[in-house]
Image (cartoon, rainbow over all chains, first blue to last red; front, side, top):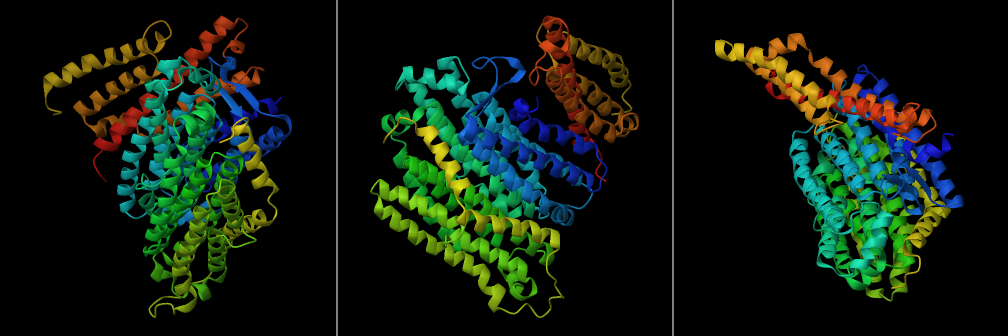
Length: 494
Length: 138
């Protein structure tokens, strides 16, 4: 009986856990409940992923109202894949959360923090699972509003400014999305995505449809922080608590990328997007310029969290580049990188979180001598860095491999060369944090510093091992991504 | 402001009617314009008026901040409970038809309880927001 309700339970479990967190006492129970809800969501996502691969898409009618009228949840190969990534990485990051949040936030606001976290989590899952364009906007707002709270929870007062900055830009993004949905609704009279896809074809290049398209694509690119609409991201990731940076870097922008794909491929269809409007070229140009511009900016950052934040924007460029090719390999490469980059950035932000836990700062100077004083933490950081650069036997290599493969397939080999060059930029900025850790002495006045607590290290190392595992045994990430890409592009050739 | 007799008397006269009107908007919501959101805001406004005229500390003695925190959570939980009840009665999530023997009565019941949940949460959030701004800084 329970299995048919899995699509709705995916969202409802964290959504119900959130208000309960408010009522709990100020001890570890709020964390325990949030972790439990996250793991249950992960198990649900995993079982739906398996079911979708074997039995095809799962549909769920909320309130039993049938599809074009009521809100429909539809789990197809694409969002089953994204749900798995989002819930899986969150489940590991929650293990990291308890000590890290207690250290950075204190008991006082802990249960409210976990309430906000669960709302973000439920919102992101809801955006991913829903097949209703307006419901998508509602969930996007739930997750965004709660995200502002998470970012503002940072201990530095600049976190408030960062959060406010994100609030302004994020609200503009959400407004664009609701305007786009409004235009579509005015033209077609429907909100269900499959129904929209059928009806939108009839309008061909009607200006109202093109305006809707522009609003939706720009709104989604703000949410996923594609260059040059990424300006909210570096501050938000830098000043948020460590666990929040790891969580958001692994999930929020990925769901933004999913929203872009959903509208471009499912609602408007690849023919309209890539042949009629040829949106592939501008996206590819922005992606490539973004990869280089933000990687170079990352090199000059002195705060490691800020450096990783700029690196995230560059990595989003790789995903969008893959998607903009509109080939099965290209779209799959974008999705593979979505999966792998979640693991890479979660591992890196968690290891920086360990440094912050012991040394109180993520400035490059505080890394001095950390290689000897916190060997396991720095080893995890190096492993994550290697995966980010894309050396063989790591997840990052698999992503780059498929992106370059997709570029060569289309004959864009100069771009493929540029991508290899961009990896060198990643070597430089990762080295800037590694160098002081191993080759510089800790400051003379520094007190004794021990290795990070076992719990934090365990969570970090689970993510590091995932990076290595999915760099060798790729049937899950590559297989899932190709299944999703084929379902999006069925019957289309660029 | 607490010394202004006209204001105090007027506020005292008005608050019961504001709260009553909020309840009317709440429970008339399924026949006419209204529902949980509007009713919650009106209900909250009644409390805010009291707080502004008689002082936030007086209001807080009547309703401590913790009570509103429970209200915020309770409304959402009530809403979700209706959804889960649909699942337990072998319908889908938020399926009101199965809540009563007659689907029409079930829809009626479902929407009233759900709207009540919304009303509770919205009123509690409004008052909590008022506290957050008006309470003297510790």
